[in-house]
Length: 184
Image (cartoon, rainbow, N blue to C red; front, side):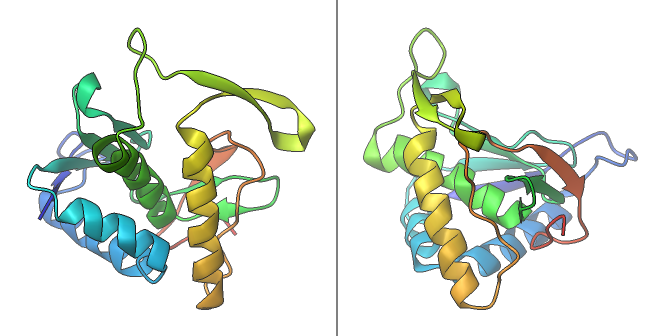
């Protein structure tokens, strides 16, 4: 298994997730998102890698992927935080983790994540409400991938997942009770 899922946060604190809880939440998220064949392909490809990708799981984590050249590969993931991605739409923590896995796919398989002076190269794109946004270039294909995953999940009846209209990661967050929960 390429993924090494670890719990985290201060023991006894509300943010703490045990290693056992982390593994269960991660497996629940994967079982949900891999109903999408796009997500399944990314997950299975990464899962066959000989090296481990750590997934640090704790409440309050700011979902992100750290590329190999930046000290990774690892993902930080909040398994119970739904992301508001449009003025009225939300995505589950499960979609958030496959989003971060796609960044790992870009880095480790496609070899198209590059750091320049410790940061990601950026590009100006049309964003939320038609405004111009400066975003990391690696987000552009990731958001397209994420949209395809949301569309495929909707075909299986999971219509609670909203495609983004902006490259901004999220407009707000809300705690949910499961990895498939959204803020609706």
